[in-house]
Image (cartoon, rainbow, N blue to C red; front, side, top):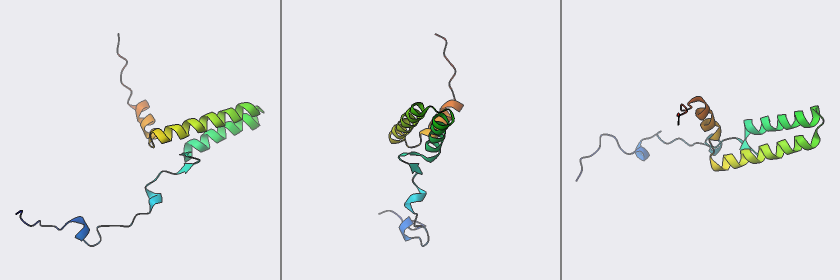
Length: 96
């Protein structure tokens, strides 16, 4: 038989469990893509489509950019942070 613990388990400590709303733990997505990426892709597509009057190119940029960001989000929900870390901590190129 094990000796009694000095502190009870987490479920027995009053005030230990805190109700947490689901929206605080999930990323903010717009159409399945992270909010910042969706806004950036939409802004770029609108600038090309409206500003340069290249409607088809703007629509293509929006469809491809949004589809790529949705695919990356489904693959890895934290891909923005991972990509930023990848750019910041590049390994030196090995000479062959």
